[in-house]
Length: 326
Image (cartoon, rainbow, N blue to C red; front, side, top):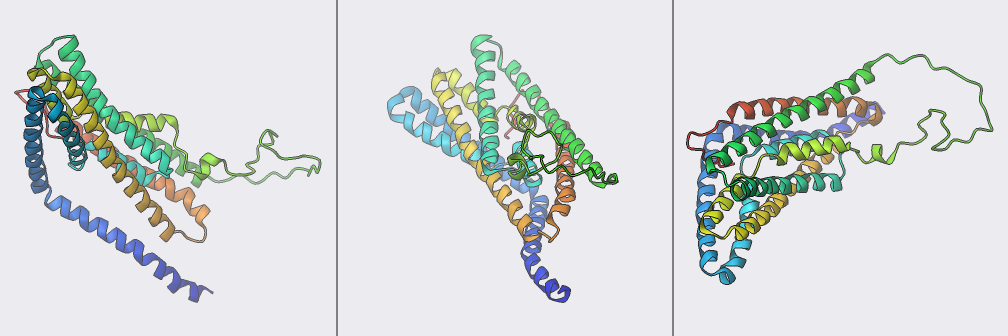
């Protein structure tokens, strides 16, 4: 039987190796051409900003005619803006690639994080400029420290995931005590409330890839605490030309467009992980899952910690208080 199973198993694994090769090749291309990719992204972003400011000026003169165009362009801007470099995509891609989760959970995480990012931008500009009437420099300083706080949360998320993964690995490798046999009691009826300590069936949370509420909250806040730079720019310009209400609407629609793109990226990552798990599923899947899932989580935690430290060190407040492109 082993002679027959070996070629079958190898034939099942070749799509997984092909997928891994494509991912590694794509990662190397991004690494080598990162500076060109970043430069082109910044140029596209500047062009989109210029067109957006022109639409805001048209809304100031003719709100009924240009309002719909502003909303549509804001949605497209949010979709394209989310395709550029950003720490939110690193967080959600790493988390979903290393943690089993349901589709509904993945969509909820990405939607909430994107909407929170836009909401933080609207709240920050409204409080700093409209309510407190502070200078734009104070606004940029507040945005800078929110950005730094977001990176600290990314590091904290990585530490928490790493701690849980190490604990799971320790429990998996810990020597198990010898089983204790007790007298069989035929009159005992097992149920959820029997209190005998036996795990009769896996819980629905275990079968569906349950993620704790605390972890979900930390993922959303670490992604969404950094205010959207494009939304801040639009709100500032809208405040200057006297159409701040339209600026808020534009920023909200931007957040919706960003949510669509981030959700699509999250679903793509989740489906890729599911396909890889099905292709590589061995015969002793239960035993391997006890080690594979914590090992993947530990890898993801290391990626998040390294990315968070790198982002924290790279975040610098520009002398003129300008807004970073992403």
